[in-house]
Image 1 (cartoon, rainbow, N blue to C red):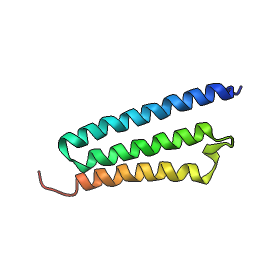
Image 2 (image 1 turned 180 degrees about the vertical axis):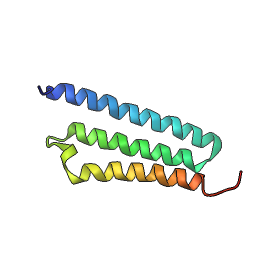
Image 3 (image 1 turned 60 degrees about the vertical axis):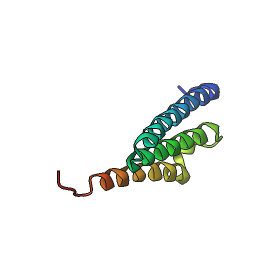
Length: 92
């Protein structure tokens, strides 16, 4: 059973909006603290929002293309690098 294109577009838009809102929350935390971890999380969530928006509006099966993985790879790599940079071997 496959979902209608309207349902897929609606769910994709809702997920994209959720990712974008999460990015705005992290941007607000970055403005308050100027911690690079929050900035990295904000950018990563915006990349995920962009990925979801492209997936929703593309006619082809976006998840099956190589380009779909590049945005997610960039987002998750950014998160991993930010966390590793934050815990960069400092003594407590």
